[in-house]
Amino acid sequence: MEQKQSLKILVVSAEVVPFAKSGGLADVAGSLPQVLAAKGNDVRIVMPRYREITQEMHYITDFPVQMDWRRETCIIRRSQIGCNSKGETKEIPVYFVDSYHYFDREGMYCHLDDGERFAFFCKAVLHMLPKINFQPDVIHCNDWHTGPITFLLKHKFKTDPFYKNIATVFTIHNLQYQGNYSKDILKVFDIDESYFNPEQLEFYGRFSFIKTGILYADVINAVSETYAKEIQTPEFGELLDGVLRKRSKDLYGIVNGIGAEQFNPNSDPMIYKNYDVNHIELKKDNKHGLQKEAGLPLKDVPLIGLVHRLVEQKGLDLIIDVFDELMNFDVQFVVLGLGDLYYERMFKKLQEKYPDKVAAFFEFNEALAHKIYAGADIFLMPSRFEPCGLGQLISLKYGTIPIVRAVGGLVDTIQDFNLGTATGNGFVFEEYSPEAFFQAVKRCLSIYNDRKDLWDNLVKSALTSDYSWDKQAEKYIHLFRLATEKNKLKIFQESCKI
Ligand code: GLC
Image: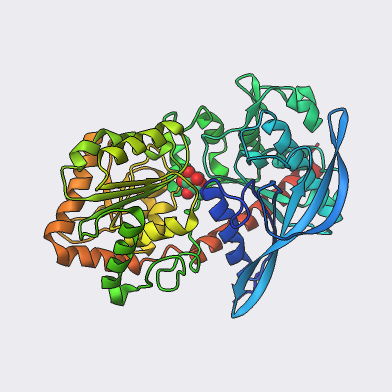
């Protein structure tokens, strides 16, 4: 078989597990590189250095970055993530873009100057490369914070031979977060005003980080096939569907994987009792552990779990709408998440109303999240939209059956349970309505309560399902190669244009 050359890959992300996380982006940016590296590629990661990051790191270099009329010093530091490759432990370098001015503050996002902060990050990433002596074949940009790297590379750095052959892939984890800022940011990027038109960088009167990524990357990727299709429609396109349709030839969808070691009920040190497909009865110990920790009665009733950012996207209003009806059933409900105060208050009220049935935790707590994945029987994900979704994959891995809405990555990963054929790995509903959602919940509860044989089979087949990164990482490698080919072709075309 032909031995393909390994790739040099720079993964750029605003958040990376285990250093900083607000959502699934961090999980992907922390786990995909490990599998890419295990397959023999030279992978490096770069992210901002937020104040909250506590891991040890080393100073590498510093340099000034021109920000309009000012210069801000960028300090590059380095840490690493370990990865297992054929029994050996390898280290993936993680570089941090540090700036006392932009990043040494409370909280990762939601500062008034976020546009400028991430403009600094984009510029610093490109300036860093020769200084750390790393010339990647491809830069993998993730979400809006990194979009302008694609443009800067192609329009501002291309005359420098160091950058000429570097290709870009832009992955959209969530089109709703766009990074749209006032036109003034052009000065910070030192981009000529002539680019500020609807065909290029302008987006409803503002400069859009995400539109820039979509327009100038060699290849674009969304985190599932269905989401890649959906975002080309007005319903899911967040006003960018036209731009995405224009680039549809270069738009792909690769479903995320999850870290096989990070989420393994058989070895997970965070859960109450390890178990596997041959010992599903031990799942009950996890349920009891969770009930104790959550202050709920120790009972063998269906335990419904929810671990999400508490935001509108997640379809929480459907759950709240049917909550009283749900409480007519003998069930328990545990929610863990942080987000909009509105949802926190709603769940807090429900906890007060049903203290024997509901427990709510408003915090970021990885260990408790694992305990819920392991201890719950049912996991809710009635999302309004869902680019990929990791919760349903993790819950399957722990033998916890998901109830999901048929959108985005949920369509690509969850098949509705069919009572006739006893096939499927979850419960799926289509219409975004409390009735449709509750119908799915009732179907699920009736199998749990009345058909123990079928339920146990569902749990067993969930426990043996494979949503690890291995196959998906191969697809990314193909995409990276495709991006380098496209970049070469563009360079060739430009070199002989008349
Ligand atoms: C975002 C999306 C989620 C996806 C994750 C990782 O958090 O909302 O659906 O799984 O990014 O790609």
